[in-house]
Length: 476
Image 1 (cartoon, rainbow, N blue to C red):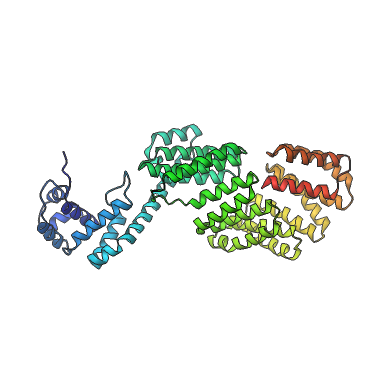
Image 2 (tube, rainbow, N blue to C red):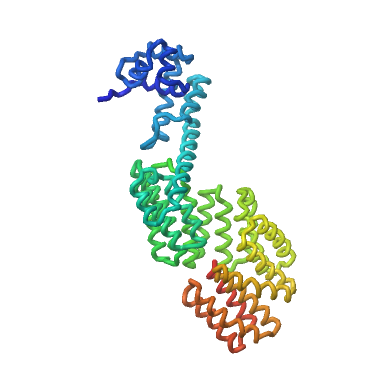
């Protein structure tokens, strides 16, 4: 049976590795074979403190390096070691080399920072490996994905769970079912991940919150509520483990979206304020969520103020897609406030971003936004021409909410001009669009009442505005 390495043997191993020396290289420097060095490190041969200092001297290290190596090893084991980790990696080596150069006292004082740096490097490594695995997993069928995570340890990691959660959030914009499937895989990866029970609980709590978010997008609010409840229990159960680089602010942000969907607006605002405190680095995303909540509450001025607060954070992050969304929503809110000059100025910025992003849907939505600005500036004919075009294009791209809003905007303009016959002609088309939407019965009934009134040429400007408000709330 292997013998347990002595402290002296461990010190020799870590310092040899820190100097990037192989067994034979170290043996030649010390005047012995590589096999002897290996035996001394592993405890097969006795290594006294005096002999260790002689070997270290042959490697160009001072005697105090032995003490520093032992202290470093204890810190690393206590703070960042996990099942499956290599005993020493390049980050450890660099840290020991740096510590050895500044002396034992300074090295021990620097050890907490060394540990943080090593932990950050390992987190980056884990995420890189998960990204490489996702390149394979993403091409598989749903069944094969599940089998891969069940059978392969490389896919049963915290970083894979985190990546699947992120992919679930991205998928939610296009496919609620795909978002749920990815979140369920994240839960599975969390449950199979190695390490302490507290760490697994923490990780599963993270994944359950993302499953709840996907269920919210699927309009299964009861299931989402249960998932978030379970997420909180698991997250608290893993509170003693602080290795995972997962912020509670993200969970609060996601839960706030559920509360908004449940029309529990005050709770949503409170959760978002807590999320900002927990994750100030994510202020841009959280403030965007908060602005959407204010908008649904009918507090347009609060929404505008929050979007303006969010802008520098979003710009700092450098993601032009997020900035496009912010400026688009800000323009919509400014239009509601009747601020024509600011709306026109913002529209120019939105057009610039749409051109740089080069995406068809962004371009189409910007044309629709431009029609709203034209309407605000009383350029009615320009607005009508744009809306007649974009309503059909939205439907072709399978975006019925946008198509419905464009159709209602067009109806509003027609009604302002007294063109009730054109509104009657739109009624049947609008009804088909509305019946495609995943909205609650009450909202659908209200929209269908507008269509019925339009057929009888009894729709009014006010009824069109009410219908637009109902659909905007349902879309959000």
